[in-house]
Image (cartoon, rainbow, N blue to C red):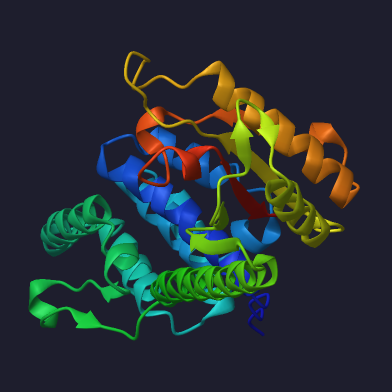
Length: 310
């Protein structure tokens, strides 16, 4: 009574494909010893007893001139699949190679040549199981795709499905992010406080200059910052504040300024007090003079606030 093959899980199918592919590559390069080491080290029964592993072991041993070992592995294939065409053809070749007499010598020559070519190409592993026959027996007969072929197609399909799921998840995450940023922009807007989406963040600007001169806030400026700070309360977001100055004659027209940095620090103090967030939760910097948000001097006595939700 023939042995039933052990059921192969999907994960094991993929591991078999990887093992056979590596051993096949070694055999193709002429490293038959390396191919055997890879196959013999498959101590997992799900791999070591797999039909495609046993078949490749038989072919490599045949190529090494070890017919007894080749026959052993092809018989193990037949224990799983009594009508396996590759195993039957391989055993038939070995049988003809072992006969005596003139006809047997001719058969051995023809069978040995066919078997060696089959092993070198590792045909049963690369393009479905091929039954190799003598010229007199007619053309090669191709069987149904092997489990390795099916597993390779399964691996390709699973990989494609995984990439598609990843792309869908990225698209959904991007859409959720865009919705969250757009909602944040709406919630931060107020009279005199504008909020616009800038990529994954919201840029807040003020319609009026916040500072009367130097780093002294106007009453309106203090109110605007208090409103924005209140709307930032309780939110999980990174807040960056950039202080601005307008380029004036005789002063550097790029590179930022100490005054702009002081304005950012003053705004951070006001937003911290209004939002309840610690002062260290705000990042402050000087904007470049060339990045002043408005034409003219008065409105550029201001800051811009970049809010990036976590």
